[in-house]
Image (tube, rainbow, N blue to C red; front, side, top):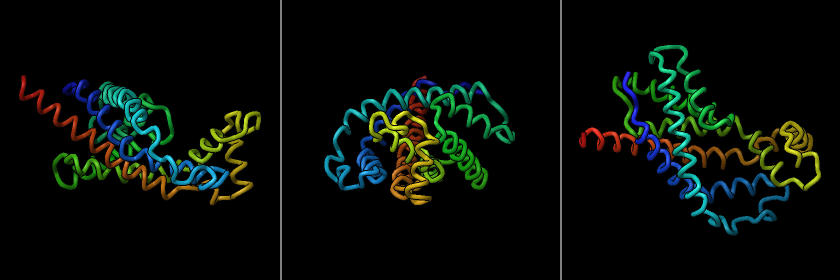
Length: 223
């Protein structure tokens, strides 16, 4: 078992995080306004959707760098044979160590599984563009199944101070949405969210894989 390039993972993660925010920040703003109880246009519509993009990209660099460094390190520590049934558990633990959110627990094991399946079918490790495609599918699926939690988070953020929802109770927020808007309310903005995160998964994981491969190659050539 070879130790992975942790420095390459650190830098590649930062590049991936900044890249995806620069491109997709406006779509996330639109998705949030679609989920607002005020309605899309009263929440701002298409006004100012690029506001805050530079600061978001700068903030994403260290966060994504730290996530991927932790993710790769935990994967390395929990090394198992690639055919082991424990592989999904390892990837879930690694994602959980990097960022404790349900979305990552779905996306990263699925991304790793799709890459492994594609590699097995073509009998060689996936290229960076193939890793990006796997990231898009994994991100879209994770986005769909976690949309109710995202709706609850949005309602909590936009709730009036002193209300029961403003207290941060996710179940209370979900019950409120279910009673007032039903299933459609729980999955409000699901298609823009899936489109945004699928594209984000393509850019984020593809950029990470490509940058990491390039850095590792430069490191090997320089040694």
